[in-house]
Image 1 (cartoon, one colour):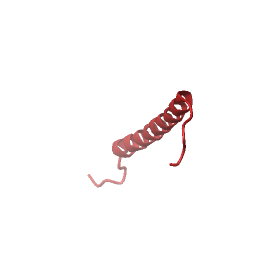
Image 2 (tube, one colour):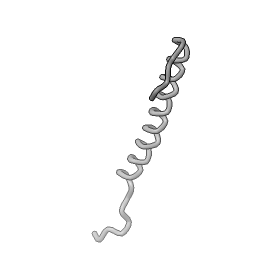
Image 3 (cartoon, one colour):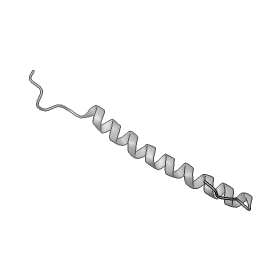
Length: 46
């Protein structure tokens, strides 16, 4: 990324935005993974 930060605030705001995006994506991914792992197989032949 060829982005120049002219102030400390601009750098911190950019870093915070990226961290929030990573946290949101990982929250959705972990939730979907949890539902995948705990899903019941109703078509199992027992």
